[in-house]
Length: 135
Image (cartoon, rainbow, N blue to C red; front, top):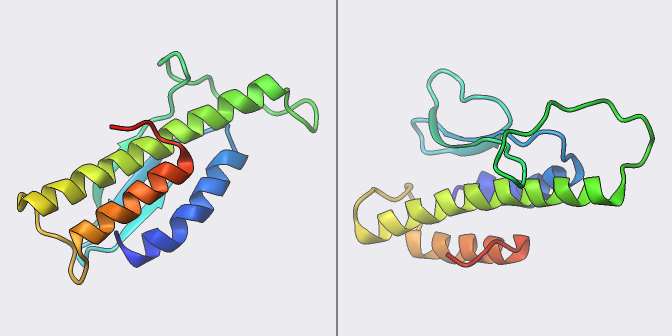
């Protein structure tokens, strides 16, 4: 896992849990192997390694975000947003896990200067912190 991605992931998790309105996320990498998670499509010259589309709990596309009428959301709406964002983050971590496993099997080259086995341990630690289902 890229050092920048490792540093950014805890902040991304907090940001995602705090803002449940939209969760389309893109995992982009450049020719140097640097990876970045962002909320807009990858720029020219970047490769999209993963794109997770925001889905509601029922699997239907989420409704467009609406301005909040009150300062606080209802507990039920907040819980749905947290579960939705958790699902998006878990999908990105699952994509990272598949990449690391392919690198361990020799099906894909590992990032320069990184150990796929160490990355897999770090990915599993993040999956555990977020509370992703065992796969």
